[in-house]
Length: 200
Length: 200
Image (cartoon, rainbow over all chains, first blue to last red; front, side, top):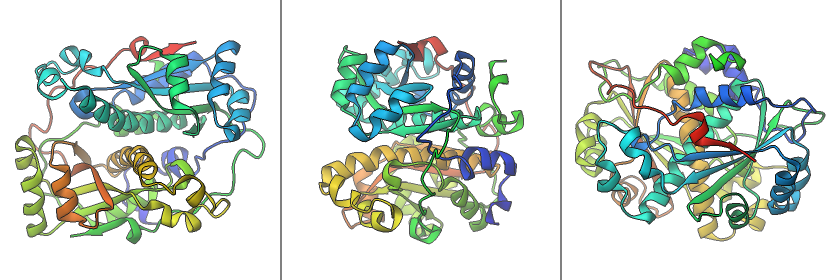
């Protein structure tokens, strides 16, 4: 096993990566506020450029909000989004730079030096928000839950329905819960090391 | 501690998130091929849309390649990129869809149904490659190493110097090694749960 070279214990490796799977069905067991807080309090430490932390999370808990969200999902994602114990909308705040003076106290000038242009902010927020989305998925698994991340939806529709200020862009919608019956397809292959990693 | 609600053991929480830091200096201890392979063999299981796996990694090990890379880095990143035991260029292959017939065997039609347009592939590769970049950073930490991810560089310059086929886009450059003296700034604050997470 090449993973002998890791320091992380094997049970944690299994929990976060090797045995974790993208779930398509869930049990009825609710996902508590305490669990979501614990996930955030862990993964908030994941690094972002200039500590910009652009990720914003909307927990869809009311029936009315769930219906509004399901309408924006692609057909193949509607049923599982309607049925999951908890659904989280992961978006970025393209005006994240307003927080830099408090979030990057040793270099508050970054706000104006690097992020005065909206197009630059949008590009940076997308990249760094996606990093945070991945930390969040890892955090869901760290809580013993399965994540079902989806990108099949009407992004403009979700932005209007759930933000409406023109400053937020959805990246992904994630179903969260304990995996149910027939929760996943057989695992798809992965590219071999030599197909992905080259040395120069 | 709100992280009591997590299943992941506390030592793993510390290793991957709470005590892990973005390193700016490193010891001379080399990062081995075995370690990088172990990292990949773990984090390759992180989910991407349609199992697209767009991430490609270039390990910069020769002196000549290191010099070519350092020239493309922003001034503030040159010294640490020159000094790190290992530097990895994380990029995406915007032609990832060519692999879908083998990587998504239960739905090979996805290649043509969803990814026939280059602009769609680029957007999807950026998002999903960033997810994989975050898994990679977590994997570096799982190997007991520190990561120093950077986005301050001439992206076009790196794409030309290290790929040259017009199909790859760099996302980040990551210094990797054991943290050295004064490896990090004091930890910057993080946004509070209520600033990031809302419920509807």
